[in-house]
Image (cartoon, rainbow, N blue to C red; front, side, top):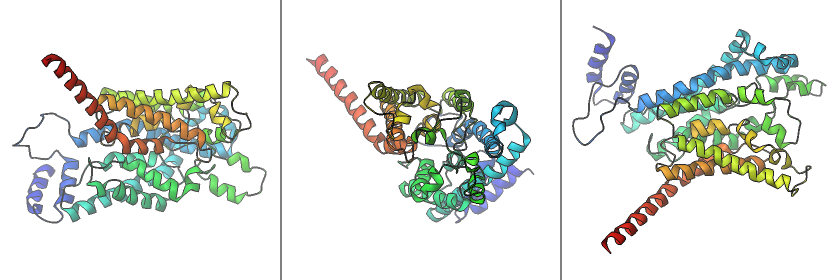
Length: 405
């Protein structure tokens, strides 16, 4: 008798017991549930929540693997700056990958281990099935944090994000805030130096800076992101090619714009991600960037101003730096917290991009606003949909009056 038959037999023994949700979660993780809907109206389709989540994870895996190479590359390049002269030759090496694995895999393990433990606990206490919603959140969290963030900080943030960001609202499908961004927001406000420091993006930079504090080589191990350099009106040492391919410091999964674009096309092709939200977010960011470029060109701001660096950044270059593109593709498109109407998606996405660049420019202490913009629009998404629906109803009522007149 195979594993599947044994699991079906064990499932009957657990029915009605306290640990049934935990066993059912393991069962459905390995196999499809052996039950079908018999009543009520429903749609016959091959996809389910688990398949949808797995599709997003597949789109995220290339960013995770690239992030592992990049973590090792940034680590060794901070020690030996000559490696940056030929990134393509020095990037995809086994040393980089092994260093990245040792740095990033613990983040993935803590994210999934702690998050799923909280999910199982709530399922057992409340007596409902374990929901698959954390499958994607657990993968997103390690990709949007610095590589060297302490694991205990990540564990505390995951507990907060799962409980406050999702479970208090009723679980998967009921939350109004993106859980992964809720976790990142908690980290930013609770431990700001670990989320906005100039060395936290490069593995080992903090320790090495302590060892040689006061030495002449301190700058050689700086892990300042491009946005941080622009915000402080500093010279940026990375080329556009480095920015596009991802040979730059940053959060684990946000650096490679090429892989993010490939992931976006995959999500759009599988109809899991909304192309309207992605496109409108990018348009909103470009419009805000154009406005700031116009302010600089008009001479309304001095080049000594603390806002000058990011204001003068070419509007299209905002898409190559920071986490804007990653947020537009993987965060803003969350089907639970985003707008549901087609017109609402255009408005929702445009405002995310618009507000992201506004926060990025006007907050030099932390020049990245995409996660705050998405969380803000998560709150207003139901309101946007409400007014879109009310507008549709009013137009139909007017057409009905014209026909009956």
